Image 1 (tube, one colour):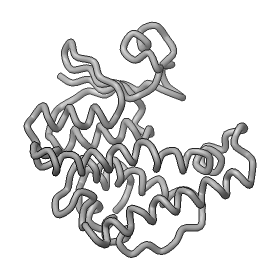
Image 2 (cartoon, one colour):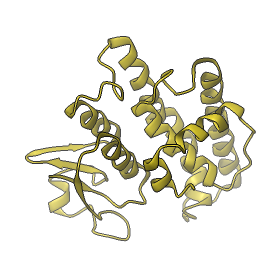
Image 3 (cartoon, one colour):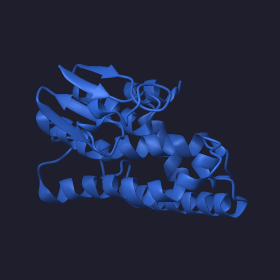
Image 4 (cartoon, one colour):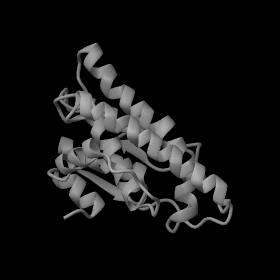
Length: 205
């Protein structure tokens, strides 16, 4: 039985939960992280020295980093629709997964920590505005890509890239910032809402 360590409110834990749902793999989840069991204890650090969730434990195999876990889960059951075998098709999926973990995540962090988490260290109005603007610019990059190459991030077929991007877009929608009207993003989200795991994890009807 696969064990997933991490609280379900974590966006990175949700990525793994969605990947598990799409691949039909049974698992047990334990709550770790803020508000639950501390991740800075020896028991957890032995699994992930970064003291961060999620961590996947599959028998004696331990893996951290949410996007890597998603790749592992698709590969384990041979889901080449989610992570293609063809080098070019696979590279496109991984390109958007890596972009989500780097450029997109970096842009929203300050605004999200200030406006949603209300963290005391994130209160500078100028930095909040700059972060929100960068966030919108990056979503605009995805919007233009989807308009030209969609309907999904890697083309015609749903993939792991859509799991990580879909949850990031849900965070974008739920953060109280002004957002441009992106037509391709709206169509994309309509497609994602057809997937039961997305609806369950985001609370979308």
